[in-house]
Amino acid sequence: MKRELRSLTKQEMVDLIKGEVLRRGSQRILAKDIGVSDAYVSDILLGKRGIGPAILHFLGYCTEIRYVKWGK
Image (cartoon, rainbow, N blue to C red; front, side):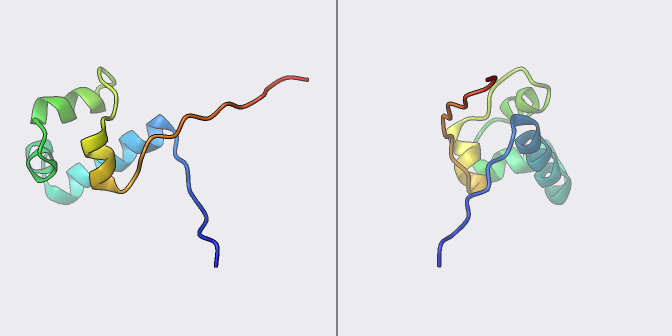
């Protein structure tokens, strides 16, 4: 049985992180659970920083570079 991979946009990942913040009750608690600073989580949610490997791993995702042809 082949497992289907699901890719998310950056905004969908941010929304996923926001959902985790709501589930846990605060950015500080989520950051502690992941092992990163709460300032880092805040910066991600504000669009000031990218989503790093610790957060991706915690959420069960990884980064994949894709090249997509557009146009004709």
